[in-house]
Image (spheres, one colour):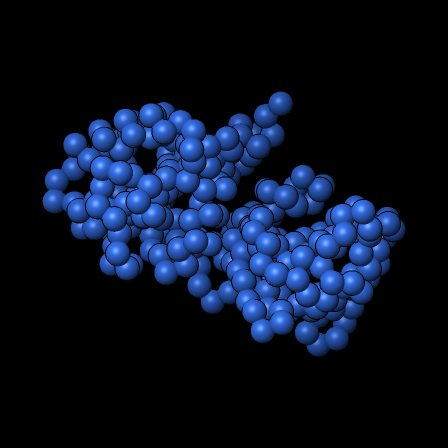
Length: 265
């Protein structure tokens, strides 16, 4: 079995190094590789010939990994939380490494997460959490409209920007703006205006499979999972064909995580 390792944080490296060192010492017959040469003790990964990826870091590290290594996005990903929120992680770096040994024997299940894509000016980007449209001038409001592919307008008005989020992303930027938490098992997307001028512009839970066109009166930034991908006045948002495949060793306790990790004081 071939396992790639990606370290997405610059802090807490000693804890990560200790966790990984102990994990490697407990395993036999596994080839270990470093993605991006982020682990000096391991050989560099060339191509996508691995069976699983272990991502160390917070949720932002997971997002950074899928955006910098799209060729590895479809691989089973075991997320070891070493960040601040760790909402998507399966295990924390403070836990015993032996707790994940059965993953290497195939004793796990896959938690598939849907992504969205944005097409604009001949370019395309994808997002696990959200696609954000923001005016290039931070001192101005944007006039933005959202229309379904068949022509029905969902919202239109002045706002600082717009978020189109997946259920996975409903606990991120969208939640900070007062959007609802959507269970990851619900196949949908959230359309959330950012600081709308009119109170009639409210968050909408919309079918995942229905495409929407977002149009801004002025050129706006197109931001996927926090990464600026370009500028445009219009874009088409639709399902992305690939999925992020998270390794799960135990039942997902989403609402417990909400209480203990996201909603803590």
